Image (cartoon, rainbow, N blue to C red; front, side):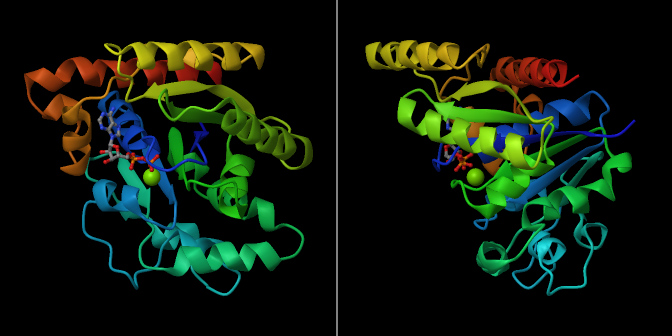
Length: 264
Ligand SMILES: Nc1ncnc2c1ncn2[C@@H]1O[C@H](COP(=O)(O)OP(=O)(O)O)[C@@H](O)[C@H]1O
Ligand SMILES: [Mg+2]
C-alpha cells in the first residue's frame, strides 16, 4: 500500500488549512493510519503544533529536502509527530522562504521536487497531508504536483468566487502540465457561522460557485468554535480535549472518510 497524498490549499491565509490538516491527521492516526504531514508553508505553523519536540530554526526541514543546495533527503528531515503514527516534514526559520525564491529561478523540473522527494517515503505511510502556503507560488505548485487530490479549505465569510476561480485555474494548469491524475476531493468549509444571516448567504454563494465548477462541499461544515482552535494550539486532538469537543472530532472523521473515498 502506498500513501494517498492530499494538498490542503487556499491562497488566503487564516482560513484554517493548518488547523484542518492537524485535526484530519488526528482522525487518521486514531484509525491506525500511518500519517505524514508536510509543512509546506514558510510560516511553519503546522510544525509548531504537530511536531513532538520543538524544531529549531536552524534544524533541517522541508526546505533542505527541496533545495538543490542542501544534501538532506526528505527521510533525513522527518521528525516524530505528537502522536504515535504521525510524522512531520517540518518547517522552521526562514529557509523555506529562500527555497521558494530559489524555485522561481530554477530550471526544468522545479515543479516536481516535492513529488520526487515524497516518492522515496510513500511506502512508509497510508496518508500524506500537505499543508500549503497561503499563495499560488512554486511551493503550492509543488504541493499540487505531488498530490493525488486537492482539498480546498475556505471560510464562508472570506469566500470569493474570484479567489476560487484563481485557485481552480492553478489546479487546472498543474493537471495539464505536471500532474494529469490530480483531482479535487472537495471543499471543506471552515469557521462556518450557521447562526448568522450573512454566514448563510455566503454559504449559498459558495455552493453555487462550487456547483458551477463541478466541485462538492464536504459535509458537515466545520463551525467556528474556540475548542477547535484551542485544542490544535495545545497540540491535542479534539477527542483528547474533553466531552464538549468530541462532536467536533466526529466532523473530521467524516471529512477524512470523504476525501479518502474521493481519491480511491
Ligand atoms: N473551526 C474553527 N473555529 C475557530 N477557530 C478556528 C477554526 N479553524 C481555525 N481556527 C483558528 O483560525 C486561525 C487561522 O487558522 P489556521 O489553521 O492557522 O489557518 P491557515 O493555515 O489557513 O492560515 C487560527 O488561530 C486557528 O486556531
Ligand atoms: Mg497555515
